[in-house]
Length: 505
Image (tube, rainbow, N blue to C red):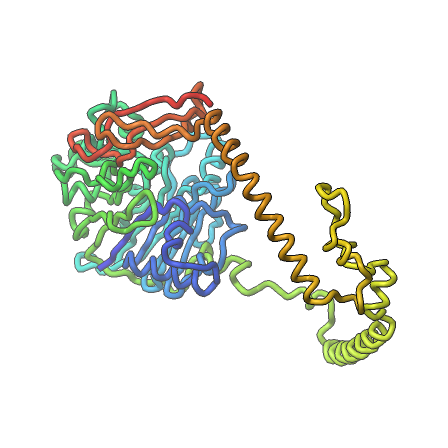
């Protein structure tokens, strides 16, 4: 059996937050391994990793028991990006980044591309520079065919449906092979795949849906009839399942009431799905992203390649252990023993010098009485400023102004001074209490304090304040809305339609 899983993780570090408490190499590696083991798949395809090569760490990229492949965004940091983790038992025979072949190295590439004549070279490079696609080619074995290829297991990021002109040709150029495409296609194909399709105008006219119509085969048609070359594997096994969603709004809390859309797919060519797929599933219980994982199980076994393709992450120079230490560039190896002895002798001499300097400093340091006399600090009054409320020096202060004996005041004098100051402070506190109350009441009358939250009309419950983030004339404005999670309109426990603009302050 071969199990494959796809997950838009919305940042590769997001699922780790609930697993790892502190950022250490060992803990991060163990957390990543735990996530992969929880998905329990031979091939795990991740989208929206949102890391670039310069910030990718070894614990995230190299996990024991797996070989990984990354495609990074070359145009923006913290944007897009996909990754594929394969168990060592499912090591691919080839791996390639991108869709157009512009990043092909002719060494371990899959080498299947569609017709790209409608794009300019600049458009193709800009497309592949977003890091939205990875292709891996696997050798698998089944009962029907002793050995055959699974070519181009496409790992696609969101908005990939706008760039897949190569997909229909992928099957034809992979003679004797089969194709699986999985990932976030950013499109709810049918009305049953969207929570609010009834309120969306021209639903079927969306370009992404039209593209999927041309790509997918009509399940009611017989082989050889009209339709695309691929099958939506989930709808093949669950054609009428409602509310089978894979993505929810985090801000509205829509996942709590399962009010979302199905944007993530596992597609396979028609023959492969009908003959080999055992099931196709969703994993909504897996948290850590605004998407949930999707996957499928095939009645085949993988034949691992003897070695990983060159695109494998472990071959990157920063992870391959080929970097030399800087001392290798500064010190010849044959001089190292001499330098070590010299460094040890210099270290000993330095320690002796430090001890001598400490003794010299102690001998020249002035005693406390000498230091105080030099600074002119002869009585305790030099540390305090006289109070403006006293026109004459009180007996207590006169006593404090006497010269100190051995720079100390008798305990009795200090105690009296502390008592006097405490009494004075209590008097001032009692005198200012009424003034403080007057000031507080005054400012309360002026400012009025924060306004109470309005109550929503549907539940008579306090609302929440939101801010408009969509570009336009209302960008940055605040408004109130029902605090409950978004859900079907028929569900009375879901959010009501209350809306109120906040008054400008």
